[in-house]
Image (tube, rainbow, N blue to C red; front, side, top):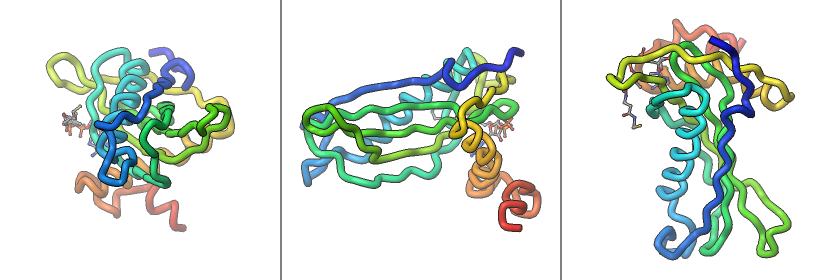
Length: 169
Ligand SMILES: CC(C)(COP(=O)(O)OP(=O)(O)OC[C@H]1O[C@@H](n2cnc3c(N)ncnc32)[C@H](O)[C@@H]1OP(=O)(O)O)[C@@H](O)C(=O)NCCC(=O)NCCS
């Protein structure tokens, strides 16, 4: 299977915050943002794996600033690392100022998707080629985050988590 660049599966999605998307304070409802992030990251997972990919875990969701009604929100989902049948996708979220000239980052989240076939059976996926400094950093740290996700899901014991243990040495 041919390795792929991160940029080959990048997904960029822009949304406007409408009244139905807000909480009682008039800011974007967190569940709506989660839905947009899940959608953007699932498209990246589908593009990278060239088939069906299902959400296996959602990790490290940070809501760092409120997003007011009528804001223009841009989400960018990039694969950070492909494992055997699963892949980590990171979503960064920015909000534009009123003139649309400046963007500030307000959120980010990490998702893990599992590649499956039409019968839900897992399937192998291509590796990735990290190119930029940020891509290399995210790639190197992804193995640690994957083990953290498996530990939290009760699918891996801490004593078997090689990257997790090395991280604290
Ligand atoms: C995710 C799912 C396919 C995993 O199936 P499984 O039988 O547990 O298979 P495995 O344990 O071999 O997991 C497959 C891959 O996913 C990874 N994975 C499974 N659960 C994970 C979790 N909670 N966190 C991180 N990675 C996980 C495994 O490590 C493995 O990765 P690898 O092959 O790259 O090393 C299965 O649990 C599932 O279908 N879940 C429901 C998905 C869903 O409906 N999502 C929401 C709607 S899209």
